[in-house]
Amino acid sequence: MVRGKTVMRRIENAASRQVTFSKRRNGLLKKAYELSVLCDSEVAVIIFSSRGRVYEFASSSIEKTMDRYLIHTKNVIVKPSAADHDTQNSKHEATNIVKKIELIESHRRKLLGECLGSCSVEELQELGNQLEESLRQIRKKKLTMLSDQIADLKEKERYLLNENNVLIEKLNGGRMLQLSSAHKELADVEGVTEVETELMIGRPGTR
Image (spheres, rainbow, N blue to C red):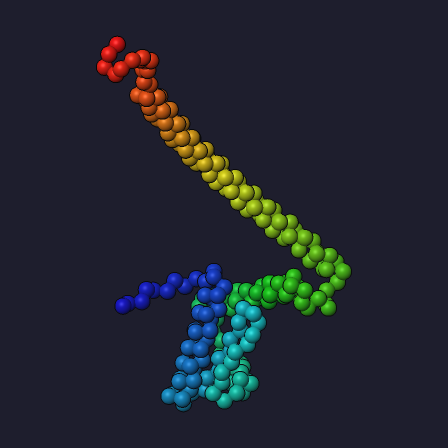
């Protein structure tokens, strides 16, 4: 069976995102190892997870490979061009994105009550206000959901009461029909059992 093409965008489900990260990370590190062994090349890979954990692989050592890379980039003669300008812009944008990610991660940790030692009173006050606003929104959403559930339960209750009333009416109607039939049978029996009696004096067969 042919696998479908994977859409290159952020996976919204946290569990699926973590599973995909683990698989792709292991695959990347395996490929780096195979490249270093099969081609006798110097390879170094550094990966930072969304939680701040670092994973790395180096055929020799990370420090040695990074020093070699820095020396190599310093010795390269840079020729200005439109492509180089675009590359510099891309690097600048990537640096800004990394900084934003670090700020978001730091803010998230502070909201969780971690790394608060370097916070000022004003920062702590701002964090408190943000948490209170978040709690207010959460409580509002919770009350809305509970109100919807209560309305649904009341609607179900009304439906069941109506069904119960219909069943009671059917049951009472059946009983009334049975009572009416019983009364009619009793009246018929009483009409049949009425016997005309006559007092006779003398021998039987003579009047």
